[in-house]
Image 1 (tube, one colour):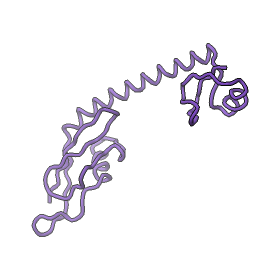
Image 2 (cartoon, one colour):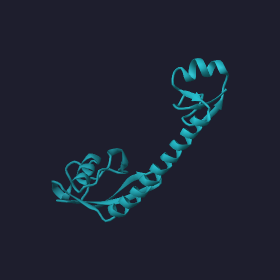
Image 3 (cartoon, one colour):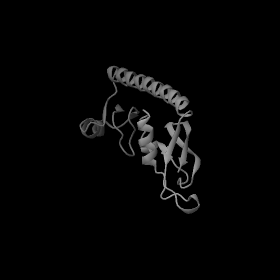
Length: 146
């Protein structure tokens, strides 16, 4: 019997995959536990519809990320920090602070998307990479002043 997986099942199949399995296994385990459905023309049509819908969402998200990338390249975040002798900065600028500052400017970006290679512990301009979408990254400038 051929089945269409509707959930990922480790070592068996991924969501959307069509696979030939034994009848008893399909009926008594996969279909009964909601991992798969029988391969019928109606279920195939539903699968194709879901795949097209997902592609459209991906394209929309990619276009949104491209637009956001253009906007963020112009953004400069400014942080005022306390300094000690020789302009040594007390503490550092964290990802959470960058996220909060972006949110104040109207950009909602998750902490996991912000990438800091080195901690920001000195005055001046620093580049911070933001992963907006797989394959679409942008760099914003962070200006640390006293």
